[in-house]
Image 1 (cartoon, rainbow, N blue to C red):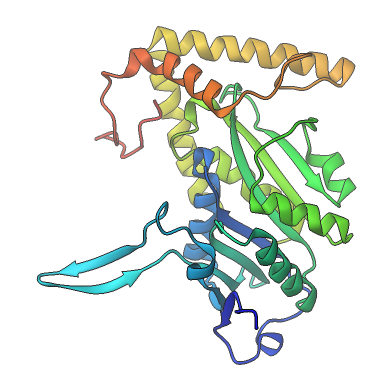
Image 2 (image 1 turned 120 degrees about the horizontal axis):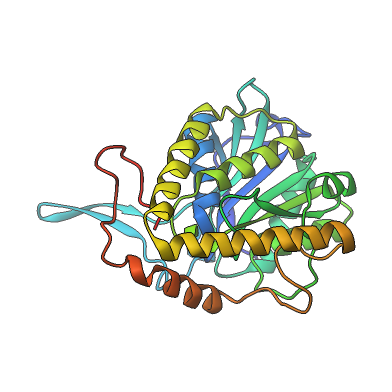
Length: 317
């Protein structure tokens, strides 16, 4: 008899969870450029009063050797065991509208069986639309609008919001597999991939989180408060602008990226080419991005890191 991948936290899922709600997926995968997915997940848990209704079993899905659980030690004994969690929760937006969130780790094992379970839950709960966001580091400047790639089964949203629709092969995440299967089943699903400035991808990037929330609001119709995020974004961008202005290499890099972006944007408007990559260029690999990133930051290794003592802002470079 197959072992269930999850346990219920409520007596009757069908009675406790209204049918027809949107689902937002915030599972953390192998990488999270700009901390966008992690930031979105924390935002929901801090602001949307989520209540866990179903809990997946980490023993069946996690590779503990690569992601070792935490334990708490007090004095002379271990007092707590804290494995990573993957849960389905019922949350509410700013106006009280309910939605579902699938939050936690990305499974290491049993991808196909896990997606079968999620597809079953989506069908049983009659989910109105499944949505997800991810972010990738790309050679784009922070001084230009974020480039978005919208995918899925909503052509009107792709037409309205997608800036770039490449043909490529990439390492899959489980949200890609879920979207693929939902598309094949003709179920409502929308994904958004944000292209973030590669030189800011290793720090939490507020503009990325704001863009993710904006797109998800358009997909789901949910309302999220963003006043604090907007203030944080303004402080962060001012910090970045100061650091760029104080370093000739950083300034030349940003100017070069701006010129490249504007030229490719002009070509896109006239010929439909990518706003990021020129004709014949491919999406850079993670290693290529890392090599370029290290070169750009070589001159800043001796700079003071951490938080700005005056503003509390994180150092961008």
